[in-house]
Image 1 (cartoon, rainbow, N blue to C red):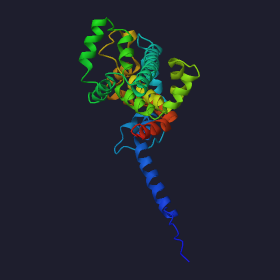
Image 2: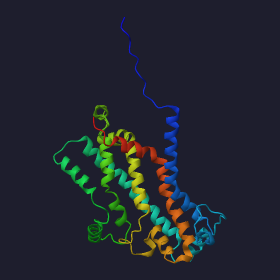
Image 3: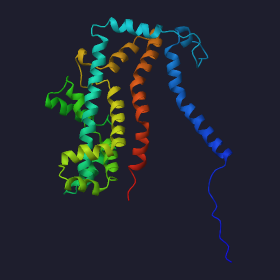
Image 4: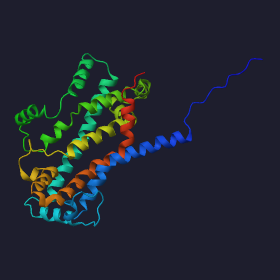
Length: 286
């Protein structure tokens, strides 16, 4: 009678799992240390900020740094709310346009074959090589030619074109079965309905990733190369001017750092799973 070979189950022991999770927790805490230190510094009084050696955690927490920031901003001839509105408006409109235009372009490149489609995608991938600093001068010349200098359009319109977002979204859309689109077309749905009702819901991780990348870029943009009027300048620019006041504003600078961290961190926490899924599947081909 032939013996039946028992298949050996591959797995880690309990001790191995504990060790792996322990190492991951240590690395996670290590990566959180700069953020924790920045938050603690925002609540430190000046005597703790200048103590040597510096202390990681705040000993006597205070809100004086935020109160001083409010006092400084209230003395500005442009209200703090105006700087905040400029940043929120540019970030919201720029991100919305980036998501829509990136998704539409990715849909065409991923699901339609037409002459020049491969060349266009190669141009997109080539654009990934260039930093924003390299394209600043060409962008400025284009904005000046269009008459958009010192307007919101100079910051919003260039944000619509994100090569990395287009690349990730296009690669993700290629995993959507063509049969799903063909079935919708047979049911009478036009391309616009297919895009909004089928493509966008099924590519939610991809466009959420684009949202995070766009918010991070626009929220931290000073826009000093395009915006000259004080009432159109952004919050990062105004806060940078505060930091130019010298060492006496070290505490205020710590408060500024925390304020600028809030939106990108919250956006990332809400969509971190989508980023992981997009990065994992964008390079998979059947």
